[in-house]
Image (cartoon, rainbow, N blue to C red; front, side, top):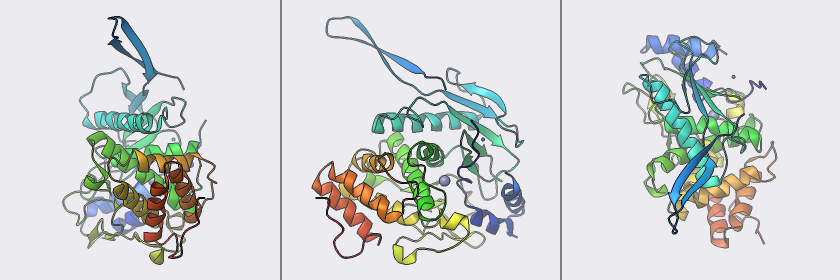
Length: 354
Ligand SMILES: [Zn+2]
């Protein structure tokens, strides 16, 4: 099945368009122009062996990832040549191993935190292609696989080192298999935001970080030192991730009062995602502890419940409050406060869950 429909990539086209005009970064400008014009299961299990209290050997089956990394060898032909599969040892190419590890981290988050077996909850293989194109300034989920460019070296360093980018892209696969939020306007911004939530959670899970200690940055590894910026996006402080003479300023609003109405970027999907992003970060920090536990589970249940593919911010907020109410009323109140702080709920009390 080939459905080349999903996300256009982790780097939004408005940022690439700006970069394409850059006088300071000629190689990056050329790479951005090229990137803009360029155009996507078997079960596996692992056996855990242990000795029980009677001294008997016990074998337990659990779900395991099934990863295949291919190398496009700087062409734009997918999938490229297979260079590492699930049972292979690390290879000499760091990009291959980073992609392999990032896919594994996302699989572990989905399985451990949400009891989800891969993107489709049916053990779908996790496929990725590295070294896509020449100086290609993006990473994307094409509906079937993750594709990574190497970056131009002047502005973007490449994408395989960023766990948040990998978790983000694979989350588009989870969304595709669940609420399938349309990639336009508010549902599109929710699609982007949920991808950022999973990206941040993948990194926090991998490092064992508490919500309070997390950076809440998406793509903190992808800019070179030449760029005035810390990441592509900040979930806790949208609009502050970069402010660079050549790239401009991070355009994300952190409140509904700054909601951007535009026909670009599929109606601002990478821009207005800042609003639900901040709601999640506030909720997770307010609850305390590990964000993937309660906060992540509430968001996951909202996504995998009966959410419509055309859900707007308020409808998604309502779904999270309902999911939070299944934990307890204090959790529901925390979710309501977060959505009120970002202006999705008005100052009047949000609808009771009773
Ligand atoms: Zn995305």
